[in-house]
Image (cartoon, rainbow, N blue to C red; front, side, top):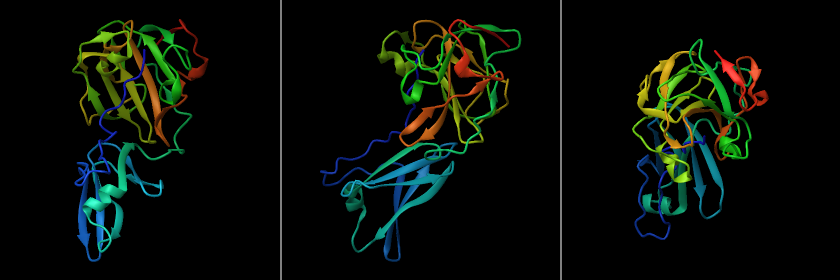
Length: 265
């Protein structure tokens, strides 16, 4: 019924008052002629953008990087900077996708996320006062599904995140971190996320390519929710992280969907 906070891209950084600040594990330094360069490594199966904030001027530079790549994100004169001064002067942060993505397929027709013949009711739609609010969650859809029912891909893409280790559920925000989910990256730079999955309920693995309509997971009752269901949202990278976006589903703008409306695939 609510989102899962995405993992591991809000990297832990340093206190600039430390004499020996800790180097983030995704960057390295390279001396080349008269320069010291900062190299950022993208470990993921999708693009990441790195933000470099100058703590002295409050200016921010953004560098997009490809999946599984190493990219030079900063170069400074070596007679003025060493690695410690760099870490005390700049803050580095990595976030999902291509920064502030504008050019994505807003007319794509997403499929209902269940198998042929399956009937479901919408239990929460766009911009509800309950949990679908704020940039991250406002354009999310909750479909009623029983534990163990098959979820299918609403759109094809690459599986880039899989978390299915949890078996806990509760009705307070503290249980948010226990929501099992699968995330799929699409060719236009957007992501879709399927949440509240059954423990070990993935039918696909990290790195798999999936087609629209392909079974990908089993519905569950995990995380922050009061009833078994599937929470589905599509995201684009914005200026401040992922933002949910409006979609067309089953040839209808999903903003027209009504609470308790029945859907049959």
